[in-house]
Image (cartoon, rainbow over all chains, first blue to last red; front, side, top):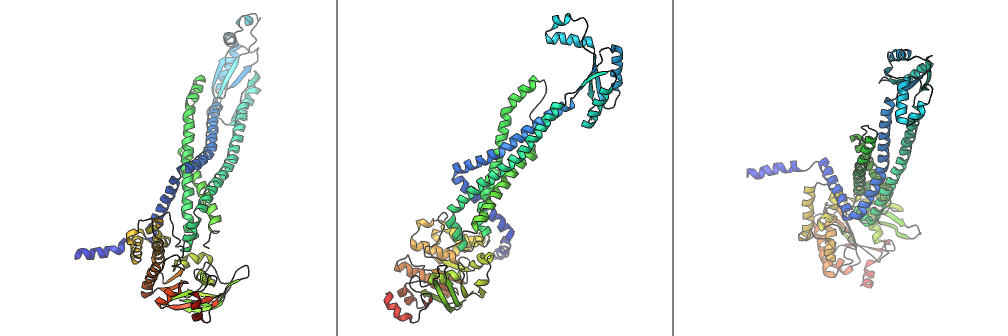
Length: 321
Length: 227
């Protein structure tokens, strides 16, 4: 008897709250939409693949630009000035000048290459050894290789460049920054192009998902009419289609990630070989967690937006007759 | 429960489906609407279900003037009314129980409560043992009973039915009418469009006869010609 009374007391409390009902309904609708996709695995996969490729393309290019920047950035840091001194400058004065320049705050290191040393190197590496022996005197000047300190800015670099050039002992200062700057300018253009191209591809994804869901709506027109007749709101009939868009976007994003990572995996060997040739330890920087999340997030957003946009247009149109 | 005041429905072509129709149906009544096809039976039900709005005049259902129900509020309005259709309008991609549960899901009823009500509704139409079947595996009469179970599962005060026995043989028709009768006995107001005069006479309910969108003046005479 006590047991029965207890059960009675519990019964009303077990009645789920509206929020819990809403939540479980959404879960069941989302699973239902997933089930619908799995019932046509081939066509679903094709759409997901199209979304994935469309997402992976700008993501991959972005990754390449990011890597190119980081590599060229390390070149930037390693930038040295070659200060060619006047040819009549004696070697001890040249060495003294080198030590003087090394005192500067914006200079890390000065390496001295004497004229004879340079000639020796040149003989050895150029293959003109015998021909150079014929020269009456050494045509090469003493050279100072000036490495700027780590914390330099482009302004301080320009200043250093100028001051080294203005020294009375200096014949010529050579610095190879121009191609780095051009390279950066090109990378900036590529980044801009990705932004524009990415926006266009995003529109393409919205259109693809919208069109797919429009077909889905047409196929389920009867079901929509009947549910509306029974009293379903537009929001209610929209929900499964929004979930379909969500799944397309989510799987498209995940597959895009897989494609990018597979591409990185394929590139790892060649890049390691290239790094070996340059005796540097360049490695491909993978996507950060935020970037990976952003790809999935963009996929989901575009999926939801595409389905929202389409259902908004079509659900009002379908009314019971 | 239902009042029509001078309700007219004119279609874009200019022809009138209903012409200044006035009628009143009390709470708890079970009323049949009869008439030829094109007499306005369906239009009357469509006005009540707010599938259409009257061109002029008033349609008042349970105190609500349908002209004042905003478009956004139509779903909530329809949920108060149970509807049964000649072609059942079941969803054939899901089992019987899910079909019957649809109005409850739309209304946001919890799963446990919904399945209890679904079973009760199916029990009332004698189909509890077929809740897991697909509608297409059922006979026409059974499908119609599923449609009725769906219409009454959320316990509406008003049930409207458009030719519910149109596709059924006499025995099944009588069975369906008996089910309606039982709902009427527990206080549900019913408005049923039908042309099955002999059946209606057997049930002995009030009849509204329509002709060309108006109330028929002398229904008794016409009964003979229909037979």
